[in-house]
Image 1 (spheres, rainbow, N blue to C red):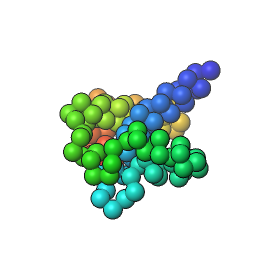
Image 2: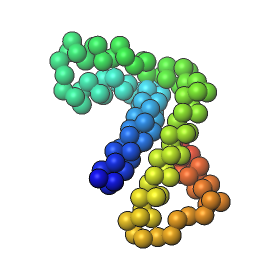
Image 3: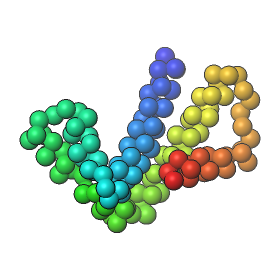
Amino acid sequence: MELGQRALGFAALGFLTLVPLLINVSAGGQRGQGFAQWLGQGLGVSTDSRERVERLFTLPGQALRTTTVFGLAALAVFGLSFGAAVQTGYEKVWDLPPARWWARWRHLVWLGVFTG
């Protein structure tokens, strides 16, 4: 039961971290089709449904201009939580001792490299 709850928590953190990051990266590209078109094509929905999905997201190139400090802060919080969950999972799987509190700087580096 505990493993299932951890897996759900891990999946939720991954979703909350990776989806906004992918939206910003894909919408930030000037040459790309944008996240909405990519999502509509990936889901294989009809043309009418794809147009409705496209109205939910900003146009390519607008995502970086409309990114707020709150959005970046939320990405940082969820990203750091996701990195900590990954590390804790690896420590438990391989029976490693928990990392010291001063070693948490690695999560900042990981999030910066992953975002970059």
